[in-house]
Image (cartoon, rainbow, N blue to C red; front, side, top):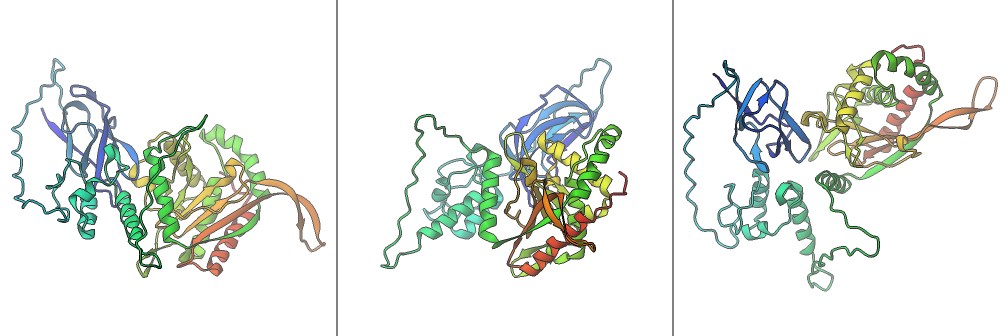
Length: 429
């Protein structure tokens, strides 16, 4: 009989650990290949870990709620059956725990050590290696770190929690004109009156809030607007969506068409497809378009269509439908929400005419499309001007003015409009 060690897989860029939030299988349960074993959560996404083999789960190495580093064995599956169907698990001798490092008792203001249990701390609270490193660099003491509220699982401090605390601490040290220190304001909890309710932010909403605040603080946002005549696309979609639905059992929507126009425009203006690293501009080779998806609980997630410029319209339709469907059911993989180089948000799906979205860091631009509405517009032709009923849409691009000026932002938006208005209505899908 063979035992298969199951590890926490790589979970995307910069993710070094995950919290094991729920065991789906119990010891002794049969498991088939690709069947989920457990649910995990990171600062980026919640996901399931599937079994790479079929067999029986014979050992769970971590309890629920435990942070587990990437690459660590967290379960053992026995992969060979016997006549009776029983699968005895022959335990190996447990490895002896490593001796704890010798540490000198910490002084009150000693910086945080690299040990997970934080010697000298008043609690056994877990701190990730990233949090410990930042605390050490900033000279945060054990006692001070213990007092910082955490938004992570089991009140764990996330990177953003610590950075927000450091920013508040910095602001509190700024003195007023008369050189008297500005005292921090005491936080006053909201009071419910009458029919008012207080709702605690869930984990996803806290992450979204922190991400949006950081983006506004990082990038000077500028937004440009244009109108696009979507009449050709509306007629083509109305003509093909029912046939496509019957043939492919999938919806044909505007989103893949928008992504196609964006990808083509990025190829024409590659300096829109950049990010900022200090005083350097990183020009991305790949065109990975993120698309904002509203979840049933009114939260938001942005899966990424990788290499969007290499897909035809049919490929984009399938990618968009697959990512959106799995986003709404919580089935996205961590790598599917990372690596985006520019994002799209479809405000029109909620009836909004136009908007000024916040850039999805570390990207430097985001395109917003509004609702498509019929109205009377002036059409210029060789025979003269005329008034016609057309399906019009307002779209905008918000960009990081550190690296993208109005000229580039305007030309990029104009090119998107050009591709939309000259959409090939003779193509089949």
